[in-house]
Length: 231
Length: 248
Image (cartoon, rainbow over all chains, first blue to last red; front, side, top):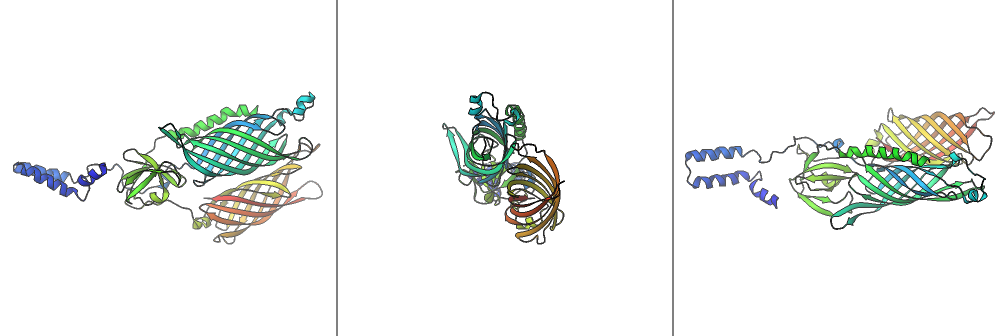
């Protein structure tokens, strides 16, 4: 609404007309010569725009715009390592958003593993040394924001969200060996602000292991909650 | 309990990154030239348009996420505008706003590239990453780090190589590579009486770069490695890789 009023009184093309009308109106009220001169002076100063733009004329420099395509974060949760129990996992994540749909991410995670049922039942036989029980993994994955959306908290707050699927390759170091590892999963991201987001996710880390004798494919499920910052 | 020890370190790193977001900047301003410009609730094509600014209104560019710009009008209303609509606005000098879009032309005049690749190294899986610098459009040097995950050993390879690209202006451009490096070989823990060892390695290879879009290209290559051992025979390994790269 304010714009329409501005258009009548402030628009550059029309202002001389508006001020002329104003001047005539004031003169006709019956003021003398002095008064008319004053109005003339006033209309001259009025040529200057009422609102001085604060910006100096310059080209928009793309490099000066804060670009937030990178995301760095930490996550924590539970990871089930086949035969070695479910344990606390912690990790870090770096993502680069190629466009609104696609992103690539690198993950690094660390978890401790528990004793197998066999080790517990047998009492003394240890399959692994203590330092071999730590499991670390890294991976590079491609993600797709399959269902972007919004969620609502009551009637006052709305937050942008993304439901994404990811898949990629990497390596897992466990029991003294490094194994090629494929990972697949999904995640839910809620953006509290433009730069801070909360992630909830599920991943399956698939790798072969021969710790218990023959080579077998293991599925290691991980459930995490994380925080990330865009920069 | 490695996981517990790392946790505070990660939190501190995250806090450092988040501090940057509190810095208040002076924003650049553009003027809407089309009849209106749409504000969306989020940086994506599906988010609803909830507000429009009219022609001749000034808007500030707060930040950018991929192809979307967070903007603010004079009254403080904030929203996300598309790149296409932002390119229809005028800047302070009255010129139409333009944003760079890396194209195929930039690909042939690039000076840096980097990427990741995965494939097969003598029957074992290999994951690699690299950075490359181009002296001329034809000649470049690359630094590679690879991890070979074999059934009997894990090999880390660090390589330095020279790459020649005879036809830099082709969209699918072949290249030849020659290099040298070191291989750190770590036998599997389930094997007994094997020590870690470091060997020298040389390789030659050929491949193609295939420009896709924006600043991305796919890279496929074959390399033939010779690993010098202190035994009577040197070891040879063939490597095939495919990966995604980005250039600057």
